[in-house]
Image 1 (cartoon, rainbow, N blue to C red):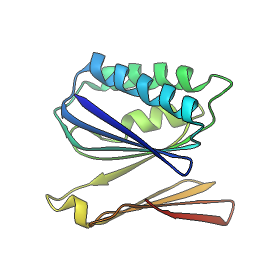
Image 2: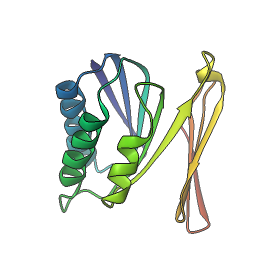
Image 3: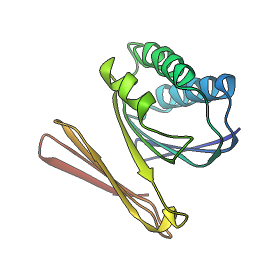
Length: 151
């Protein structure tokens, strides 16, 4: 797996491509956590549309559990949006992480033209919108206070 990280206006953009494995997924998430803490990014957009393959549900559970502990450091307080496609991204890992206290969303793309579509995810406190097509737009609304950024 190859990971590319960019920081823009308090948002950490993480792009991953290549074949997925348990150890690489864990290492990738740790690098993302470290970069977010180092750069002071409160929001993370993880683009896994270029990733291929799958890890087992048990491995997704373990990665999520470990990452929540990693995010639990005093310096970390992030909102995470994961964009991907099945079978690599299913939402199960985000559910595990969310149940353990991390504010995380999954936006699943279902077609081959995924980069030309809109995605939305939400819970009681947040709405996350991601739009693809030439540029990437991330909109996170909290407590009825919209924050919109063009990245």
